Length: 414
Image (cartoon, rainbow, N blue to C red):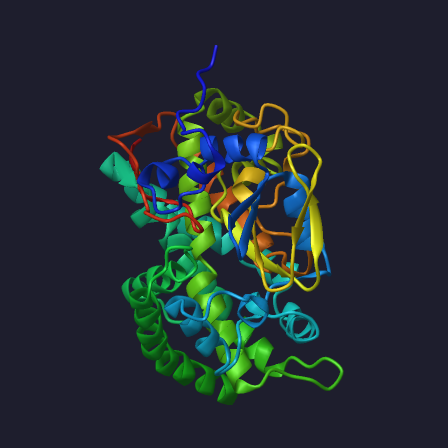
């Protein structure tokens, strides 16, 4: 018989993103919230939804906006909210935070360059990169998964897709960590200041690359974006820069955590690791179950354009008004037993694993989803089939994050 989750009762105690115990393993807290208070009023301006049905309908619903800074009525005396609003009103916005028609226009333009063909072209070079890492691991008798495989492979792949130099990987990793820290619900003014400084260091480097590519176009995404036209439209320089920053810095971050979290999940479920190692038929579906089980993005936010109504635990209506924010808890939705039977078990052959929401859903479904799946499939399958013995050395170390969840150290013996 399984034990009850070791969490404190009462919904006010169950959503505590600053709590180390919550960050280390949020899933028992998610389960308790989903059971006792699935539409949880966090404060007068914020509601957290944890059921798969509520999360999916919120992500897909045209009555919700992604541009939180424009639609949120957060207290004016909140310095972090005020700073975010100031940043949002100056310069080009990331496609992540835009709503139609601006989002529709940019998505249409960039999708032309980010095609399945462009991704598939990278499959063989990705396999070669992974094999180089595994050759070294075989000689050494082990590897530190994050530093040697999970980070360098997605970084080199996104660099190849953009035809970017790879000699600044250490700086890029630092920039990425700094920028993704601003996505956390506990982000501070210091985090925002550090992100502005990181962008200030990154932009001159990218500006030089883009200028060179404009003069000497090649067979890469940056060149394609420079040439992209749709109905006579094209990206202006500020929009192009914002998108390249998103791809180059954030484009690899979720894949790093997908590979790290996925390998750890397999090590903790040796029967599933053995099943995948022996059955290539699982290659096409296993990554979706890893994304469902412990996805790299745990939450995202939406703002209702008008009053919306959810059903509370007893069926009573819970209204959320314009000016408030809905936190959609992707991690909780992906463990909802109403959608996924035995949700806390890793089952690589799960029939409906592809209904997970790890890549969001609706208009903001992740542009890089096919690239992340391809990289993770190649990295993990080649790792587990190359080495019949794969063992964890010591305890894994987790990044102290909630929104972007990932292992930051995973030492393996092979």
